[in-house]
Every structure is written in structure tokens, then in C-alpha cells.
Image (cartoon, rainbow, N blue to C red; front, side):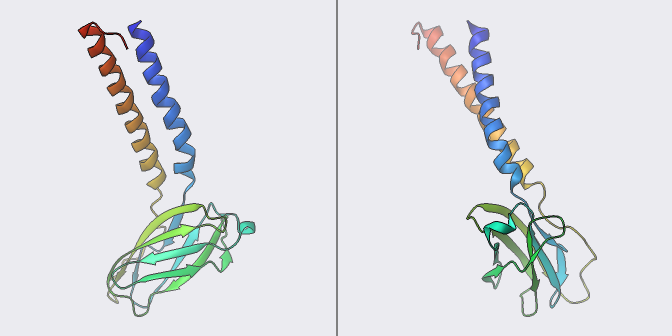
Length: 163
């Protein structure tokens, strides 16, 4: 009977993690480069959005910004992209959250605006591990839930009450 409880708890955790993994892994927004000097240009890309569903809205927030940027072109690797000119931006870190034309989230990424002459050359810059982190957290949560259920059942069985 104990082995059956362990198997049920494990199956519940794995099943929940499997359901949550695809949605967490699909969200993919990148900013390239990840660091740019004031007055530089960054390319915002939402690779999982379908261009046929409409434009992507990139919501940019940071030290002095709270603005939306609409996608302007189809990205070479798929999805949609827009260019953002950083003239007048305050130095610091900015977050870009993308929403596809169908209303679904395409994840988020960050970039940093530095003083002129201080930016290292870089490429990519997206938070490509966001989906992996979300999936790992979901699996860890499911495992913790299964362990809690198993421990409660053991305590009840040891106390003489069967749930």
C-alpha cells in the first residue's frame, strides 16, 4: 500500500509538471544587444508570436519609462520584432514584456542602458532561461505538494485514522 501512495504522489507531480512545461517553455522574448549606450538601438523580438494574429506589443518599463512599442517587422527566425532607440533613456536596467496579437504572453527580457563609451559589445541578451526556470519551479512545487500529501497520509495512518 505504501508503494502505491508513493507512485500516486510521484505520478501527480510529474503529470502537473508535464502540463505546465509546454506553456512555460514557449514564452520567448529577446533583446539584442543586452547592453547598449544611451542613444543606441536594441531589437525587441518575440519569436513565438504568430504574425497572422496581429502585431506584438512590447511593454518597456524601467527607471524613466513605461511605454508600449508595436512590432514593425517579421523576425528572421520567426515571430515579430521592433527596434527601440534609447536616446533620452536614463541609465539602468529595463524590462520588456511582450504580448502577442492574440493576447497571449510571449515572456519577457531585460536590457541595460549604459553611458556612451561604456557598453561592451554583446549579442543575444534575452532571458532564454526563463522558460526553464519556470518549468523547474513548477516541477519542484509539484514534488513538494506530493511529499506533503504523502506525509499527511503517513501521520494519519500512524495515528490510527485512515484517510
